[in-house]
Length: 145
Image 1 (cartoon, one colour):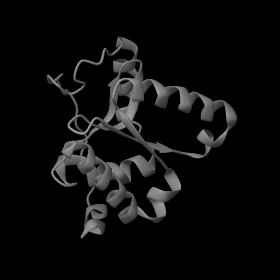
Image 2: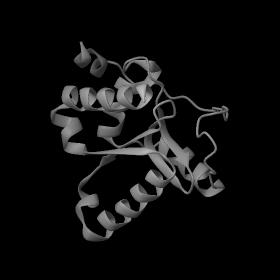
Image 3: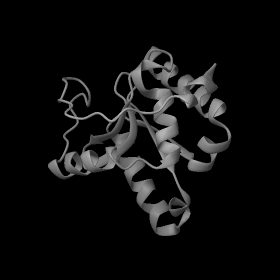
Image 4: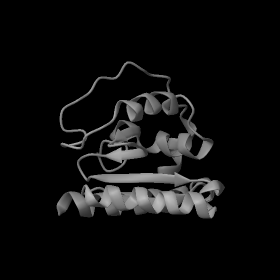
């Protein structure tokens, strides 16, 4: 059943508005908001593939946002209800400089109460069902408390 979502094409959308509670008190910089708008139009193929399966509450009825600004950062995917970020990392994130930057970013998000799941772009390409199960399990655990 999870594979069926791969047959759908994402629709181009825009003009979204700020909804209360989506970052639950986290200050977001204008730079992050501007970057998020650009990034929403330029998803990588693994991000687009995952977004098809997360959008519209398709995963356990949970609402995910793509390229969502939180503080100074833009998260690939964010579920406010679970305070869960999902980051899809390509090969560049394996380089020492990017790895260290990702660690600082994860530490900052953790201090704000946001749990970060990092997964490789390759895992989205070759093992999407397992990735979706992992995301759903972590999100549901965080919602239940």
